[in-house]
Length: 93
Image (cartoon, one colour):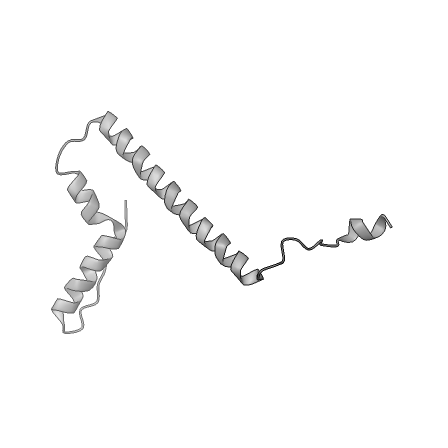
């Protein structure tokens, strides 16, 4: 069971309500309520979960590609063709 959501009310009830809605959205409560309005067949649930997992996987791959391109840009041009010397190269001389 999840812990209850708590929001401090410091005189401004509108701001507290807004904060509560933000917390509920972050926790996925609204998404859960929408999903539970109607019965979802087990086969549909499996399909939905599989599609969600695929979206997460693709999102992760995009993030990794962006991160790698940033690392390549930070290293600068012309570094790929240079030979790197490590301890095994020096010992073989």
